[in-house]
Structures are given as C-alpha cells and as structure tokens.
Image (tube, rainbow, N blue to C red):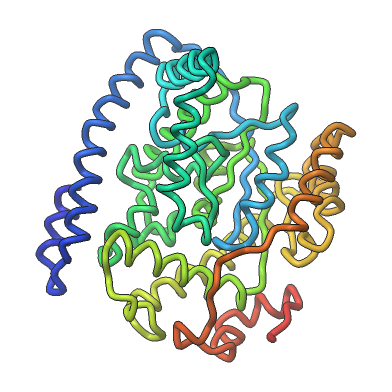
Length: 376
C-alpha cells in the first residue's frame, strides 16, 4: 500500500492537494479499520467456527459496467425466500460475523427509541452520496456490489479510481490469465469465507446473490473455488455502455485522484486502457460461460430485458432451475410499475470523449453481429 502512495507522489505529474488529502483520509480510515476487521475475523474462528461448514451456492450477475446489472439485482433481491446478499454497510464495515451481530443489535436497539440513528444515517448518506446519485444510487442499507470486500485485502479493482496511473492493477483486467494462481486462491478463499459469514447470519439455507461487473474476468477463478456458482450475464449495446463507463470513470478519478478530465479523451493511455478493459469484459465471459453446462448460466439481451423484465426473469429462473413463486411474481410486477416512472439523470455522449460510432462498430463488431445491436 505504501509503495502505491510513494509512487503516486513521485510520478512526474505531481498529485494535487485534493488527491493527497483524499489519500490521507483513506489511509487513516483504512489501516485502523483493517486491524479491527482482522481481530474480528480471529474472534469468528473462536466463537462461530461452524460457519466454515456452510455450502456456498452463489448466483452472480455480471456484465460490462452500465449494462443493467443493478436493475436485475434489485429485481432478484426481492425473492427473499431464495436469495440473500450483502448491503453496503456489511461490505464496508462488517465483513466479520461478530461485527454483523453488533450492528444488527444496534439496529434493534435504535428501533426501540424511534430509529434516530437510522434517520441520521439516511440524512448523512443523502448528503454524502448526492453527487453520485446521478450515476448510481447508493445507500448503506441497500444490497450493493461486493467487489468492495477485496478492499479489506487491498486488492479491489475499485482502487484504480484512487490510483489511475498505477500499472499494479492492470492484471485485474485479465484476472484469470494474469493474476498468479496463488494470489487468486488467497483472494477467492477470502471472498468465499466472507460469503459464508454472511450466510451464517442471514440464512445458511439461501442462495447468495452477488451483482459484480468486476467479476467478468474472474469466471474461471470463480468456477474453481466456488464450483456451485450460477451466472446471469447481461449484454448491452456498446454504443450505450462505453460512453457511460468513460463518464463514470472520469467522475470518480477526477474527484478521488484529482486527475485532469482531458486524460479521458480518445487515444490517451487511460482512455485506451479503459477501452481494452471493456473489450475483454465483453468477450471473455461469453467465451468462458458457453463452455459450461446450460443450467449454469443464462445470457440476457439488455434491450429484451428492459422491454419485458417479467418474462425474461421467468425465463432465467427456468433455465437455472429456480422456483418462480406467485409471491415473488407480485414483487416483480410492483418493481415494473415503479421502474416505468424512473428516468436516469446520468448525461453523457460519445462526443465529449472524442469517440466515434465508427470506432465502436469496428472494435466491437463481433458483439454487434452476434446480438444484432443497432449502430445508431
């Protein structure tokens, strides 16, 4: 970690005060938090050792970021009889069982007094996340990407937003091929035990639900260390996903790493690295998943999914051998009614990144051909 900080400070394009301040705040939170986490992990081994016997049968929702994975997760997460998943508070500050029990106890105590702490947190997150909401709605109490679990090992792809110039994270674009097996084993075993800890508290009889676009390059590793996994892969038109990804990447890097927005223009190193990532994350999951049995995965066309979510969800459940109950069907109908009124506030275009449709059609021609996406 310190090497990354030193390399950032020493690079020719010196970091600005804002970036140094963000890195300072991150470090003074990260180090004590991790010490406390690992103490709690140690206590888990003494107090709740039976968590290791829990069988993990996850369902992973993957796809290039900005492909509709969040919407699909929110639909499937309403199937409370079959699924459970981690909320943001659990991912960030309570990966250990004893931490989860503490916060659950605190929540019950809070409700006895009219939920003042909960309301304080809601007000705080409305202020803290207000600028992010136009890109992606966040709440401490909603199910969220569990990629952040790897922050506890300082090995999350999210760190690239703090260190966008660092080559250390480039292997994570090609995780299965470029990250050494010993490292992948350590990271995936850690992830598996975090999932077991969640199931120990929230339902060992349930299937774990994970929405994680950053798992696109990890299919082989997941199948190796979590052999009972199932996948839903969403494919969306690259003309929509690419500028949206660049816009999010630009926002996070300019606010966290304080980089100049110009580095995201066409042909710059960070721009090309992002394009490289998107290309691989489109093609690799398609190539890997189709080598497995049909009941292990399902592929959704984003346009068909958005046009008729209910029918597509039914089809996915049937393909993966999941029960589609009448109770859950009512939940799906309610979500469809609510989502019909939703309008994204995220504004972006190809022009702002100096990108042309011609290049996207050329670079992703196999995707356009296979899925018959419009080039308009």
